[in-house]
Amino acid sequence: PTTALDVTVEAAVLELIEDLKKDFNTGIIFITHNLGVVAKVSDRLCVMYAGEMVEEGPIEEMFESPAHPYTRGLLCCVPRIGDDLTNNRLWSIEGRVPHPAEREKDACIFAPRCDWRKKGLNLSDKSLVKDCLVKHPQLVSISDDHRSRCFLGRETLKVPWNDYFRGQRRTLEHTEIDDDLDTTDRLMTVDNLKVWYNERNPSLRAMLGLAKKRHVKAVEDVSLRVIKGTTLGVVGESGCGKSSLVKGLIGLEKPTGGKAELMGLDLTIPVKNRDLSLIRELQMVFQNPDSVLNPSYCIGQQIARPIRKFGTVPKREVRQEVERLLRRVKLAKYYYNRYPRQLSGGEKQRVGIARALASRPSMVICDEPVSALDVSVQAAVLNLLNEIKEETASTMVFIAHDLSVVRFISDYIAVMYLGEIVEFGPVERIYPPPYHPYTEALLSSIPIPDPKARKRSIVLGGDVPSPMNRPSGCCFHTRCPRRSVLPDGGAICEKEAPAYQRLGDGHRIACHIPGEQLTQLAEERAKAV
Ligand code: SF4
Ligand code: SF4
Image (cartoon, rainbow, N blue to C red; front, side, top):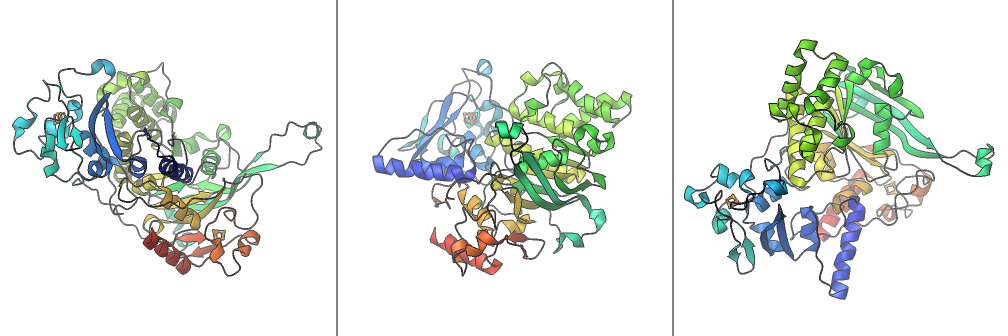
């Protein structure tokens, strides 16, 4: 029930469900793919795979000592907010869930993807997996109340489930103020960008031109620098303006004001008037890959099209280039002749990435590319983007609504609220305090995949205000849980928009509360929960 919700709304709904459960003593079956949500609301967990229950048990035992290889894999895939910031790789489960028509009756349904079977992972006695391809495993007891559908039974428990490979994030040097950067390092420069939409007013007065024109101010005075070879993550809830910012940059909306340039090329020109060279330099990966894939053409033709259009390679080398791109996104050569309907969601997103890379762009904007994917597929796509970024020194803007996801891919993070950037900084400065009160609420709302960490979220009152009636002063003042700590009880927040406080390493926060006090407040809260 919370899949399509923003983290802050999700947190409020989950707390409500927990309270209702206690008050009415009601039994709840909660269906979700989000392990953080499961850990927060459940007492027992049942893991399903390809139509079968593969493991079942009490929630704490399932998270502490999962027995089935699929459950263990799932737990490793989840990005965790408390993880070491130097980790930039997630575990992913290779392959895909088999189609119902392809499921073997006389074998373990997870066998084609199981590393314990394929690689004899961690097994001293390899004969334990000899039946995986010839017999269907039954549920076996792991403890009194915990069962797993695997021939290995308790054998897997000998190895800690979280003992998996972690990648090493590179470290970057940061300058205090963006403008100190050498201009050759800046790939994209955005200054005071505004994207406003005219209000649709069907009244007679409006038709006669007598009504006052009103605007939806989706993006308001956004300034950014994107440095060559880095990834900027942009996060915020629905309605925060991140999609409008993307539309403004990609040319789907004409910015109302401000400047935006990519390598000196003007980005405020609508896409239909853009020069081919600008389109080639700025490409996009969409949330829904189906929106860019034509069901009537094979994958090879669809990747070849932008290669031909932009003249990336001579005509006779197009096929080779398509195959190179397929390899780059980890799809085998034979995908050239497949059609979109034959691909899983994750494979389609890989094709979407290959198409975006076809013109060899200087910058790729990824608009929520993993939010519609399952956790194991999401991990694989995030790892792929990270590898591409590191191998090709690509520059990316990564839009997401989840702070636990962006940290794996981003070097810098911008937190948006109501069309403004309320906090900006290098990733290693965003996750420890001080936080902007909105960032703090977002971080506290992320469900932690650990049933022992049943923390209370900061529940933000009310909805995001309408961008048509922006609050005066600080744009967050109508929902800010921290403003009362100010000496005047937060009255200043209603009158004066806060200037950015510069907190070192390019980290800036738009808030009237001083940085040291924000740190202290966050630390006090961490002790209290
Ligand atoms: S029964 Fe075999 S293939 Fe299936 S999960 Fe267990 S080890 Fe893997
Ligand atoms: S300026 Fe005031 S309302 Fe805005 S975030 Fe800071 S404390 Fe909250």
